[in-house]
Image (cartoon, rainbow, N blue to C red; front, side):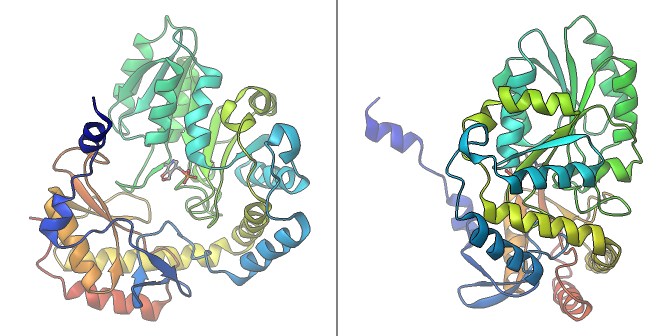
Length: 394
Ligand SMILES: Cc1ncc(COP(=O)(O)O)c(C=O)c1O
């Protein structure tokens, strides 16, 4: 094929945005104060980001980041195995291991990288990975790259998982992969039951707690606290770019396994270490969560309850998950993007999910209010949503 034809075949179809008169993706934002964003100089309430606790503009975190740069420079300019394993990263690893109650942790530049490189280090064609049907793209990509046999199970369906596990018994290693909080649905995995099935069928559980860490559990420590799972012997991954309001990813678990990854996981060994600025900020956000989660969590849940009540009154159909995420079932991509546009016109930023991120005709508009705004702002948001009554999907 001629290069010009190749590029032609790769051109993006923008007809949906053209028809809707709005492109909700790649909006150029400037973050203002708590929960506020500007797009083209106009102020918006941020119900799109994963800043669940409103820490992204926290002064203590910003100061810690500046201090980390002053002490350690802009970058370690090396991979962790070579010149990049600084004391501040080791401190961050211990801090995350302590927060989650796991023996050890290792930090990656992102959770996408952690998830997509984990499986090549632990599985090959002799092995089976059972994975929730709605698991994140980074997990699926990693499992596929490993060559292991993939066995998807229906979303949060432990009966289906059990069937898959029973059928997989002749394989060498068996892993079961799920997210803790599924952010498009707002649902939470029955992870205690999944761990029980893993023990029964000799499988290793792997949980991606990206939307659970700093969000669920009495003290914001994530899925293991939320489901009261003690002595977890599986593998744990999480993004540090959501409630922890920074960047980076982590894999945690048994100390011997984490040590194995340090020498065998290519996404870690061949990639520049997370920058000091991020490590410094993360140490501060973890300290804040450990100290202040009861108040921050209370604000997050009360804002969420007010949002859900207003959306329901305005006639929107919500997916109804347990997590502090309001997911509006919209149906077609047109409806999803049109509703995002209506909210945008009301000064509210949302996240529209359309295929391939969701199955066909199952578009979702996600709103995360978190503790990003105070009560007065939550009231304003509720009034603006009330003005949209009648715009919900039938
Ligand atoms: C469940 C889940 N896992 C992994 C990731 C990737 O995390 P990161 O942004 O740290 O690469 C995301 C972020 O979109 C996510 O939602």
